Image 1: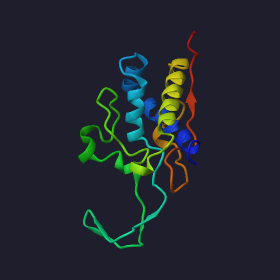
Image 2 (image 1 turned 90 degrees about the horizontal axis):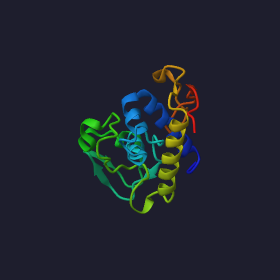
Image 3 (image 1 turned 30 degrees about the horizontal axis):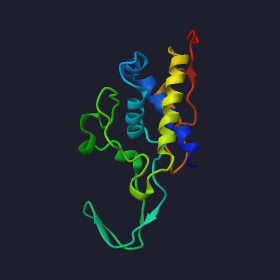
Image 4 (image 1 turned 180 degrees about the vertical axis):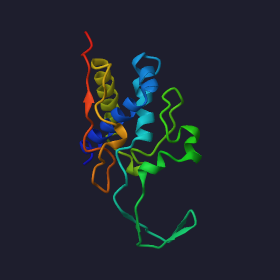
Length: 171
C-alpha cells in the first residue's frame, strides 16, 4: 500500500481540493506561493490515510479521559488529526496556501516516521505543478461533493475524479 495507493489517493485528494478552491489554486499557478508549501497544507488537510492499521496498548493508559487497557485495540484516525481546531486554528478545515504550513502527522512520527516521506513530497510537488501547468483551465466534470468515496477502512479518496482538462498550455 505504501508508495502506490497512498500516492494515488493523495494526488486525487489534492487535485479535488485545488479544483474546489480556485482562489488557492490561482495563488499557486501565479507563482505567489510555492507548490512545496501547498503540498504540506494538502498533506495535513487531505491525508490519504483514514486510519492507521490497528495497534494494541502495551500498558494501561488514559487518553482524553478514556481508559484503554493493556492489550486492547486502538485505531487512530489520521484524517481527523489534520483537522484539529485546537492545533490548526481557523485553517483546520480549509486550504490556505498563503498561511505558514504547520507540522502534521501524515507521515507518522518518531521511529514510525515514513521512510518515503521526502520522495512522496517531491512526487506530489512535481505531479501537481506539472498537471496544473499543462492544463491550467482544468475543471471538475461532476459535482465534487457527490463523488463516491473509496470503500476501505484505511484510506480516504474517491473512486473517480472526472475532470475537463481544457486546452493544453503552450510550451
